[in-house]
Length: 256
Image 1 (tube, rainbow, N blue to C red):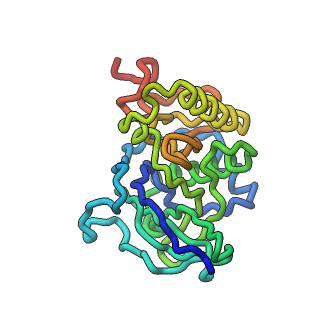
Image 2 (cartoon, helix red, strand yellow):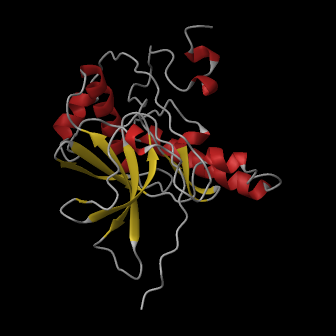
Image 3 (cartoon, rainbow, N blue to C red):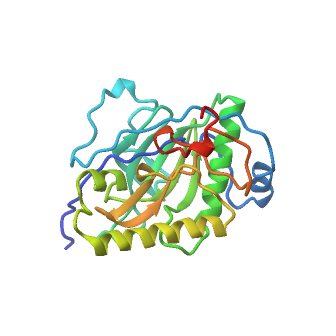
């Protein structure tokens, strides 16, 4: 008999939801998206974060996509258990892989995104995010929040990602998780450097590294780099004002 499930829910930050499907097995489509094009920078969309153990306080009618908790996707494989995050263009669910052992269940984070009526700029940016995320997901590094599968059903698209129940690095810092714990600080920095090295080895440059975009498997540890919405494959870029303003270096701003 399996033990009853006990979990802690965290709000998760995701900024730039992908809005259009790219089949990850199609090298031709990936190469088209990653071709050297000039892009217009879209406004940054950020998401609430918290270490509370309850789901975010929100008005359901304000969600960009209806709460699909209780629904199944992927021919019934993934059961959307609960809403754990939302932003201007999509929602995030904790999902159960029904093909996993009931006594040792496997969970994923699944982004639900609109898949219809997208502007050209949104389509280009979100296609590039998916392509870059797929490239880094091939890495053997355990410090990347991996993109495992893309599912298109009806008017929505679902991105199957690693589930990181430990919240994000911003929350860990705010809760003073690292205060006086030098060994944990060193461990987290090494994990973060490994994740960045994996991105660069894959030819992907994140451009929006910040505590809110670094998830944790456990509270304050088990680093996973997430959110590739502003990433690029260009080693040298002439795009300015790319990133989050509070973390932007002076050399990246055109207003300095």
